[in-house]
Amino acid sequence: MTHGKGNFDKQILYNYNIPNNKLLSGGIVMKSTKFNSRIVFVLVVLILFSSFTTLSFAKTRISLKSANSASTYYAFSVGMSKAIMDGAPDIDVIVEESLGSVANVKESKTRQNFVFTSTVSNILKAFKKEGKFEEGGYEKIRTLWPIPGIVMHWLVREDSGVETFKDLVGKPFIPGGLGSSGEAITLELFESMGILDEIQIKKVSLKEAVDAVKNRKVVGFATSSPPPSPMVVELSSSTKIRLLSLEDEDFAKFKEKNPVFTRFTILPNTYPNIDYPVKSFSNPVGTYTVSDLPEEIAYEITKAFWENRKIMEDMHPFGKFLNMEDVVKLGAPLHLGALRYYKEIGMDIPDSLIPKN
Image (cartoon, rainbow, N blue to C red):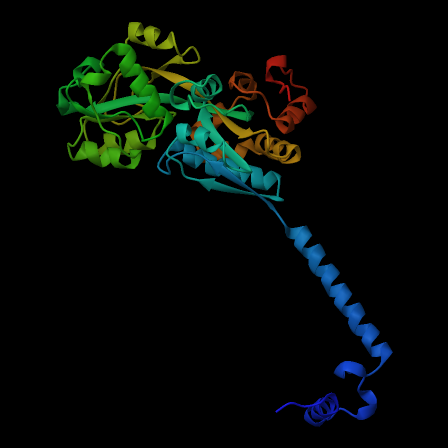
């Protein structure tokens, strides 16, 4: 049934008991101009307050891509996130587990507000388009700050009969966590020694490595971590293992193509039942981002990191080895925000670390 306009107005009046003298054109009811003005004023105040509150409590979210959750570096990254958020309360840092620094570097090409850890050797290869980074596109990587470097551990079951690297020939071995820097380094080391094709390489997540050794599925695995490595501590406490030492001539051959690596000796009794020194090597590690990260954000997180470094020192023993001077060894130009902080505190910055664009 169709009503004319007059009937429609009457229906409104009937349903809501609105007097005729309060009905305006189109069925809009206005009790008084003064009352209406108050409503508008209240609404405007509420909108402005809501906007102010939203802006006041809005935080910038940053992803920090680290390492396997069982690793020392993951625990250290949790400390980094706490240090940053304590010093820069307007920033939220979300720590993300990762397969390793190779994967982190690759992911840097596509992420926003992205901070990640990596070995320097991977950064150098990425800039040179070498190895796993031959596709290129990594020119935007920028340095933020250094963290203590990795130390390679190659461990085997004591009853495996393996006493040297050459004894791994013909045996199943996990070279490191899938996609990790440790895996890439170990494979390159084996290649330089001429034994890569003769070892049964098993590519799995590092989380599976401890059980694989315990269950005799492999003779051993490699891991890259500052000592003491939690994984090595765990395994050596329940299973008799041996840590392999790298001879000087083998290290020298490997270093020819990897000049950033330096000799490192794991001291006796660092691990249960390992009462002898182990000759290994270390690789510098840094925290990086890309040039797209806003300068102010990079400045804030760099400042917060260094001013709250005690948080990281308290979380893990190797936090005490943080050295700001190592920032010049990280293989990539500084982010403009980080550069601003280091200049602010009076640090001398080489021209090679100042981004050209």
